[in-house]
Image 1: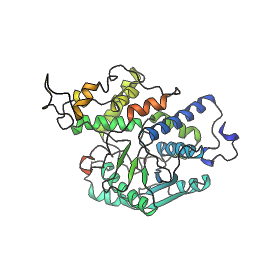
Image 2: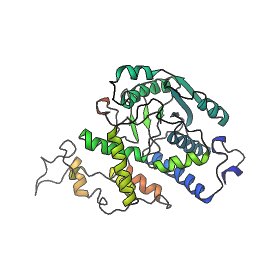
Image 3: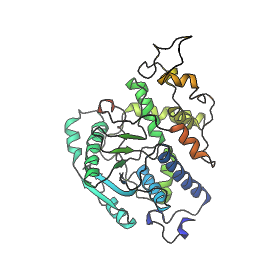
Length: 337
């Protein structure tokens, strides 16, 4: 029981004393740690800017990181940051008072990007994409001013899956929010430690902890119909086949370029029967990489070898750089999450 610990961070105190909640908390922390390890997110001595919107996801993110750091499993400094963008009705005192009470190091920044967005976006269009870009620029600036090496966002597994299908259906590409990438200028890393965590777990954890959740619809502009349709589709699949989301996420970590159709990823032109052994990208076909794709053997994070299994499946294959030209559907989920 965490509350029995004398040095327990205030953010983690007052947790429900139930078996159900203890399992939920352990799962949240375990899956967050698994993503951090699998994608090599943490470097000792770094400082992370943890973006906090006051929504359920960002609270769950902050709590998981605080617990990992308290347990000595995350050797970085954490600075919580809320960017108040001047949205009408935003309760500007909630987060500063909460963070002070929880004794969480933080920075509250006010920038009226709402007025800019409303003046630029045509009537009837969603504000989310432009709002996210303006927010991202301010977060990068704050990170540099505070000496942070990483900007940490609260996007979870469901966000990543939704964005994948948004890009598939409406963007004509296989792409999503990566758990880790480097910004366009090359001086900051963007991290999503909740990549393995479900939205349901984030919501339940924050609700049971009694965190003061701020609604994300204060601007009056909701995410577009396309994302709502994708979310409804995934919800339907999960209802009819529990565990479907986890299987789909595994597919994102188990890619076989030789079984797709992109000649930029795989040298189809150089592939021929009786020819020399394949090299480079072609080597994955000969080596049988990804042969578990059709087995349905989703990694079991509950077991003792779960972290190693997930890390092996999800090991990053390249140093991703941010590409603003491909940001159409990547960031219309609130990046200050």
